Image 1 (cartoon, rainbow over the protein chains, first blue to last red):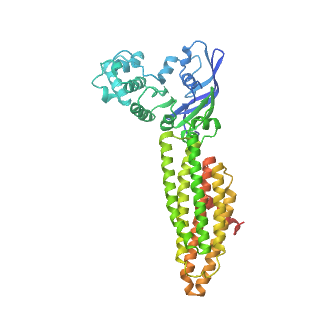
Image 2 (image 1 turned 45 degrees about the vertical axis):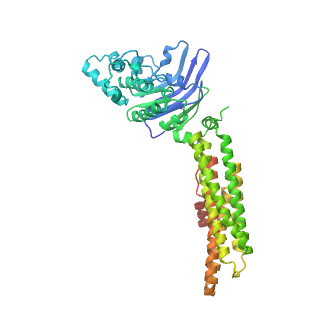
Image 3 (image 1 turned 120 degrees about the vertical axis):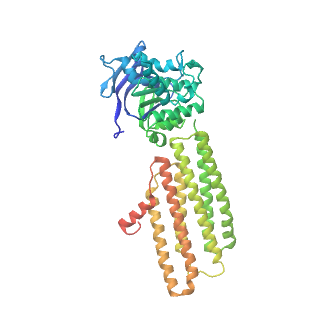
Length: 254
Length: 228
C-alpha cells in the first residue's frame, strides 16, 4: 500500500457499546480512489467499523469511540469537526435500498437542498448529473416526478447512490449494498461501484466474498472486533498470510 | 462454502493418475531393457487411459471452480491439479514414445548393453515417487532433492550423448539405432523436467510461492561444474 495516497488513516481505534467492546485497536489505511472491502463473519464488527468512518455512532446511546480516524490529515473525532459537513464528505449507502417517500427528483435533490442549493436550474443539473453517474438516468429520465418507491430494488439502490453523489462526497461507505438485490441488479451495481472508483474513495462491507474479490483493490478481514489481515485483494484471496483468514475464506471456519 | 471433501477427492485422483503414469513408465523401461514387444504394446494402449484420466480430472476442476468458487489454498490446489495433470499426460506420451522406440528396435541386437538409459529411468522414477508423495502430503520440502536428481539426470543425458556419438563415428551402420537410443534418453530427460514442474507446483500449492527448479538446477551446474 506504500505507493498509494492515503485518504483515511485509522489509528488504534476502539469502539465500545456500554461494556461490550466491538472493535479492538484497529489500525488501517484506506487509499484514495480505491475500493477497500471489509470482510468477516456476522458480528465481527464490519458494520460498526464502517460507521466509525463518518461518526454515525454519535447517534447511538452508549457508543464510545477511542482512537483516531484521520481524514485528509485531520482527526474526525475532534470537537471542532462539523458532523453534518463530515457526512457530506463521507456518504453512506445502506443494505436495504431506502428511497425517501417522495419523487425520484426530490430524493436526489434532498441533500443539495439541505446544504442550501435553491435555484431550480442548478438542482436540475445536479439531479441529472448524479443520476447519470449512478447509471440510472436512462431508466428514470421520463419518470422523475413519479414516486421513488415504484422503482425496482436495484434501481432504488442506484437512486440512493445518486442521492449520495448529489452532495459531492469524497468517500462513499457501503454497507452490504447488494445483499437485497438479484444477480443482475448486483452485477450492475458492482459495475457502478468500479466506475465510481475513478472519482471517489470507496469502503464496502460485504458478506459476499466473491463480491469483495470482484470489486475491491484492498481487502481487510475482521474477526471478533480485531483486524486480522489487510492487503491487496488478490493476495488475500489467493495467498492469505494468516491461518484465520485462510480458514474464513475457504469456508472452514470454527 | 467449504470445498474440502471435494478438494481431497481431487487430490487423490491426481495421485491415482500419477501412480498410473509411474507404472506405465516402469513398463516402458522394462520393455526396452528386455526387448518385450507385448509389454511395449501395452504401454501404448495405457496411454489412452492416462488421457482419459486427464480429461476427467480437468472437468472436475472446472466444475469445482464454477460450483464452489474456491479461494486461497483451495484455489491453489485446483490450479495445481490442472497443471500437474498436463505434466503427467506429457510424461505418458514420452513413455509411449519409448515403447515405440523399443518396437522399432525389436529385431536387432542393441549395439551396446543398456546401462545409462535404465539408470536415468530409475532416477526419473525416484523423482516421480518423491513428488507424488510430497503432493499427497502437502510437503514442500523437496526442492533441494529435486535439483540434485535433476542435475544427475542431465549429466547422464550428456554422457549418453557423448557415448552414442562415439558409436556413430566408429561405424555408420550404428547411426540409425544410436539415434533412436539418443531419442530415448531425450524422452527421459524431458520426463525429469516434467517431474520438476510438478515439484514447483507442489511448492506453489503449499506455500503460494512460484519457483523455477530447472533454472535453479542449471544455476547450480554453472556454479559447481558438475552435479553433486
